[in-house]
Length: 188
Image 1 (cartoon, rainbow, N blue to C red):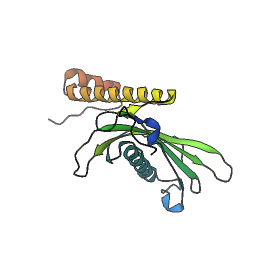
Image 2: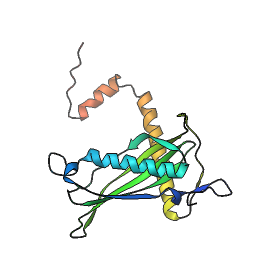
Image 3: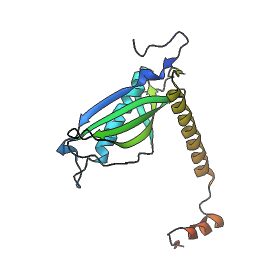
Image 4: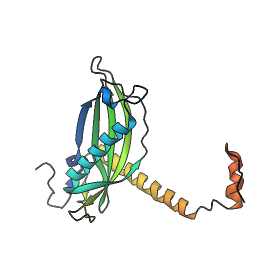
């Protein structure tokens, strides 16, 4: 079986790889005639679920989505391809990297539309979190992706700590607002 666990208890990162392609239809467009970003996000969530579930062998839920930058618009009639793989595993969580490209099927021109990272959590049938297998890295690309995910986890923890300790009411914080395009008019 492609995603079986090795004798050491590890699962290959490559066991999580999933690719889906879908032709963009007029029903997927927004008011400006481009493909609606919400529709693309739905597809991204589906492929993140597929990659995480394939890797963990369990049902998975989306815990968070890290930065979705829409780089290029997608047109009606283009073929959109999403590629995903688990780049990092914790105890019960996994970071799934997703790349979205579109192709004009008449000209063959491809463009990178966005990349994102979804944190997925493995669950059992009762909805409790469960451990996922540790990861076996077999390529330098997988090593790079793992280290990038580690950095992302570290930055997220640092950002969370900053939010917990930052005093937005302090004189320094209020004075710092003068550097931005805001007017401070607090109600008494």
